[in-house]
Image (tube, rainbow over all chains, first blue to last red):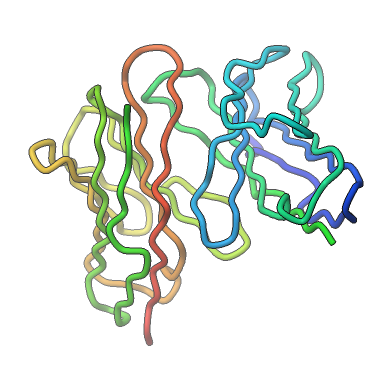
Length: 115
Length: 115
């Protein structure tokens, strides 16, 4: 059973470009979470999605960031018009269901560098 | 409301000596608690989790943690540190309130193991 997959693992963008990060959850998992980790900081929740639905986007910046989890294919975190402050590691996690006892399984992350 | 406090941002131990990483939490519900480990430039790996069963939880790589409700603590321990334990460790709390609730990450503790 493959784990959570993220690609690309490293992404370099210039200011103003778009960044598109992909996450394929573990087989059988229908819940996806995105987190951002800034240097020397812990993980900050961004968004929680189920297939075709955004359940909680309270951690997403109001502008330039969007996320989707289509019926087919991976979840996508999209950052438009990137700025240097967007440089961070972005982690995706998945779980088979929701609720306090469910473990979230993490992908290896995408490290975004904005020049 | 819930929160997690990791009391030490950095811990340094000698190889072969015990490890203690401290975590205190607050939660309006009887929480589930997790410890994750992150090696440099890697994703997060689950070490262990507490979900209201036995209060002493054994995890991978010789780690264990004890849930102490009276102290609202969930400290991570290992009897003898190994060089490969050098990493960052995150304590995570999730409320068992039924349905979806965000998990909360601590800011992390970096463990250094000195040969």
